Image 1: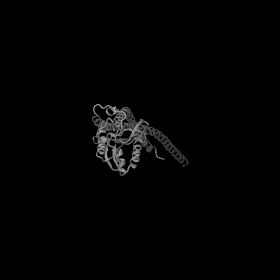
Image 2 (image 1 turned 90 degrees about the vertical axis):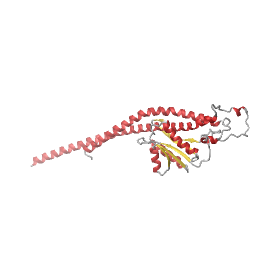
Image 3 (image 1 turned 180 degrees about the horizontal axis):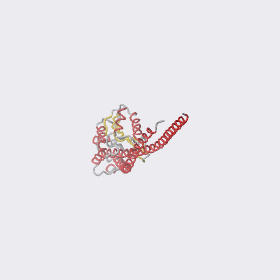
Image 4 (image 1 turned 60 degrees about the vertical axis):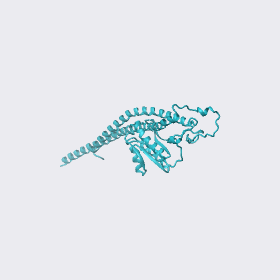
Length: 312
């Protein structure tokens, strides 16, 4: 059994660690409220931008005459190489947050023969480099406090790779925040931007195709008006809306991931603080037992010495 001095030294170390984990829990809880509000406010806006854009690209009559070469983000081509944007954290001590999203990303990338990897967060970069993956671009330093400029940098790297033909599609892997105790990894098909499938089958997307001029039109008025009225012109609107859609989608994913990271860290530090309290109680009991055993041993030595003197 360890002596009381060793147990007391360990108790002091556990108390110091408990103070650190308690402080980290309070900091994460304070920041989580702000991150949760931002995540809740950005998600509906990103969904609305997506719905607006998909409605626009679904109206083939309104887009008639526009060249897809002017809008490379709409280009639906055979997939030979897939780009992945993986969003994780810069720091650890966040429970299973990093491991969950990185295992999900690893399974997604394993299904692709050719990949182009963009990592967000130091943990994502270290995870894939340690396993021999080639990381084309990496971003870190703002995983728990992202801003829109940070999202624009990531979006530019993805758009450049897609527009140049280096990749044929881009998938965004991040974490959807539900609550401080609930967050799930998810995969979003970011590029190309495709209209909803007419038959509702598959993934809900179908390839964007040029309008067929030879196809009969039942209502001639639709040839001039279409389903969507563009103001300004469709070309000007899409030129502004397409890049903004990519930026907004990535920004929303970063905010969701930041809230998930802070929630996971708050939960992990709360558990660590509780475990430290349990360990302190156990060490205190061991300390009292060791101290009592020492006192009993000293009393026995004194009694034995006194009896030895009496016999002499």
